[in-house]
Image (cartoon, rainbow over all chains, first blue to last red; front, side, top):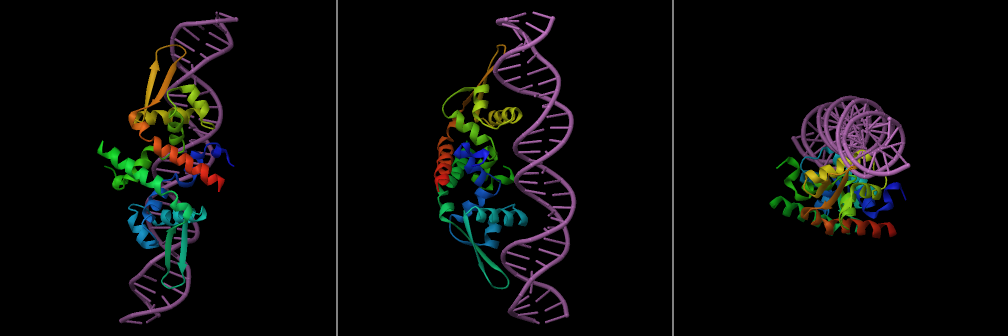
Length: 103
Length: 103
DNA sequence: TAACTATACTACTTTTTAGTAAGTTATTGC
DNA sequence: GCAATAACTTACTAAAAAGTAGTATAGTTA
């Protein structure tokens, strides 16, 4: 238990509270995606941040990374069960933003 | 419309996606709080980050800052309607963290 | 008159996050 | 044998977020 965990909300934020994580998880809600396809959907992300972010999500058990041993490489990302359990939150965040933008 | 807004979720994250914002909003769900009381509830926050963060939340219209012209100063923070509309999200994030910590 | 109060501001430093640009891999198809 | 491919990886730089420590305020109370 680190010092950020006295409040569960804070713990949640350490897992998904960065610029790109929620966006990547959100795009994976629709199902598995090849690395390159997913990356193209995340407009504005650099190659470095994409790889770094999905790897962190993998390390935290929110996404599953499946590598096919072919050349050129093929890698697919899917949400884990733990990742899927964020679905309501991710959709709520998106909906809130959509409503708020309407004013 | 800036470049982060192509997805509403991303827009939401620019409003509340920092270390302390969700935590401060969460603690205000219970009602108005004096500045010092609120700050003491946010364990680990520095004085600077507290002031800076509530002021940003005020600027974004998520909290209301009420100043009483007395000495020593008295300042109260409340959620605005816009801030209150985040209630479900904030509680969901907290609940998700609580469940996840249980494994 | 000096300490105390609650709130905030400032300058400065450190830490974290993000971006750029180039290189690596191993096989295929020309 | 050389370019094209998809998915990284690395070194370096830049920008954003957060932390530390000190200062300001102006009435009230000892």
